[in-house]
Image (spheres, rainbow, N blue to C red):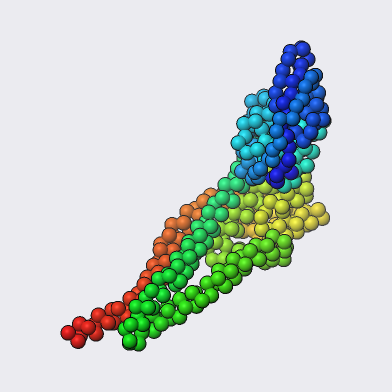
Length: 407
């Protein structure tokens, strides 16, 4: 796979092309035999191959890399660039060695007679069923460039909506982490210094000050246990979440019920559902088959189960509108638009309009949450940090009053 550390070598080669002209170059490969076979397929008679250096390809192929590659490939194919040459241009121009390796491997498969969709299917981590099905449909219909363009647009829209959801959720989470770290620093280093100062007062300390000092003693004594428990708890949760379908389903349901954020996630999921189904349906993929990809791309277990239920009902003769209504997870507007699309024979266009509408809703919701979160976070931090500061200065204020009163 292209995501790990892939042991390869760089080979320097020399040879003659079909016209007998001497040419030379470099190639990354797993062995000399691979270099010879690849060059032979290109019509080059190899005269010399030499291993230059060993290397490990480091890096990771991200969803953004795949989206960018899809757009570049679609653009070049629309411009009339041959498929293999397009792979060469994109692969050699990419800054990420893992992506270059992935594209070289796919190009090699295509050169040896494999279809493009079959070559993509060898890398399910990067190219899901939806991607491969659309490419296969494009190859069969002879409209690969058009479907790659549609696929690139789809991936760009999905990537954008994921980024917006992530930014909306990460911002408050990062502020909470910073607030906790600041509070811990105050408790461990600042409060003990005040405690020493107060011990010389010889008077009873106010209640809030005593609470903060007791909490500080707890932090100083057990800081390693507090940070260790939180760190281990977070790691254990993420570890279990990745491996437990039951926990994922529970978290997905919980996320949809969150105040403010739940509605944002629901809108994003509906937009993804509509965009995926529209893209698949427009490409001529049968509805029952398309719902497999829709379920996988939904990103939420509630809507995954709903898609599977819709698929089952459609396969027994139920209309898409009725099947969606039976799941009770789609708003009335989505159901009505789907019904109009089915009746008028323009389902893909109507679903695209639904996706556009909900993507706009997500944009507005993210903007509203961002503008709302800033003052809320400022108030929370102000109360937390300000409360600690006031609690520690109360004895000093009290002493000042006693001194002034005595004077």
